[in-house]
Image (cartoon, rainbow, N blue to C red; front, side):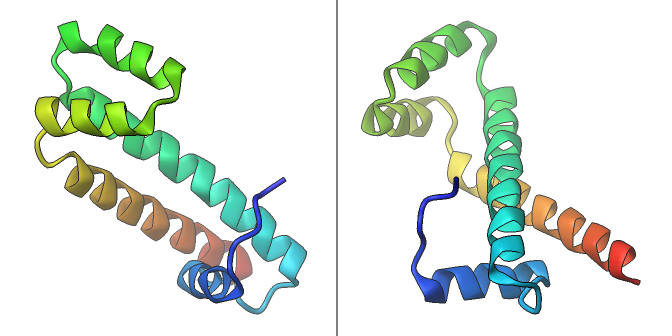
Length: 105
């Protein structure tokens, strides 16, 4: 189940995904699915930029779940990681909206 998001944020995301006219339950399902795919894609894009020898260190930090330590690590090891992740999420959004447009056409 997707954590509750503020209504304004949900509406904005639904509009960007082109699903604002769907029932709320369907919107939430699509948004949750998109979030999972976007997070995986962004993580993979950033990990590809990590030097081979640093991937184990990243995995250890990720397993510990310390977001602050992960942020410091990525700031040090992958300068510009936030821009890489943002671009990847934008690409995923574009792919999803194209797919949804094709399905509804």
